[in-house]
Image 1 (cartoon, rainbow, N blue to C red):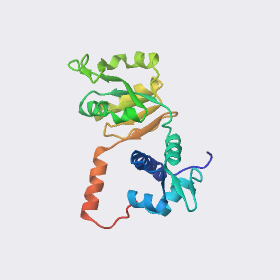
Image 2: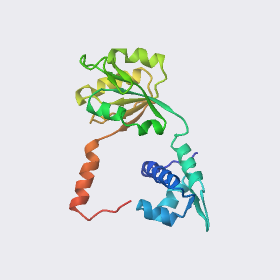
Image 3: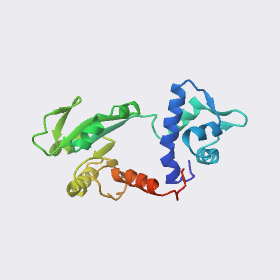
Image 4: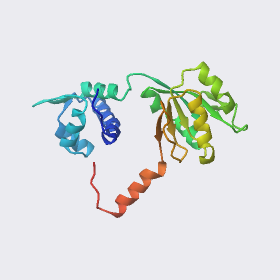
Length: 212
């Protein structure tokens, strides 16, 4: 696909995928953009505009075939294949992510978790043994690691990130509460847990916003 798609549209795709999956679970085989808009609390026009970035999925007078659209978005998101992830930082965030089983249902498989704390190294979280971060380079060479989940303190984040890049890992999901800049050939998703809560606080105290 040659057409560039805005980040705002890309960020909405997982939400479409989630709602369509719920519809499939409920046995619903087709849905109009109007009915989907009511469920998702976005306009039917927005849904049509978003989906038109990737092709023509709906039919006049019929709406959307839920299973076909679900599978199309699954492919667009790259969820038709699996990804191997390692977690760096076995603290509370790292443990919480590893224990969230829905990632595996979406094709994200955790194959390793690493830390510097000798009291944690050697213990097990779910079925993974926490390894010494010194072993990360060797582990990366021996295993196909697609994504590194960074759950380390701010003070260590940039150094660990530099190591990750040098080991050839191409995707970084960053929970270290600092902005990491994209390196050539590396995709970075910076996650700030407080951002969503502060957005809620704004909405709580103001009606001056447009719901998308």
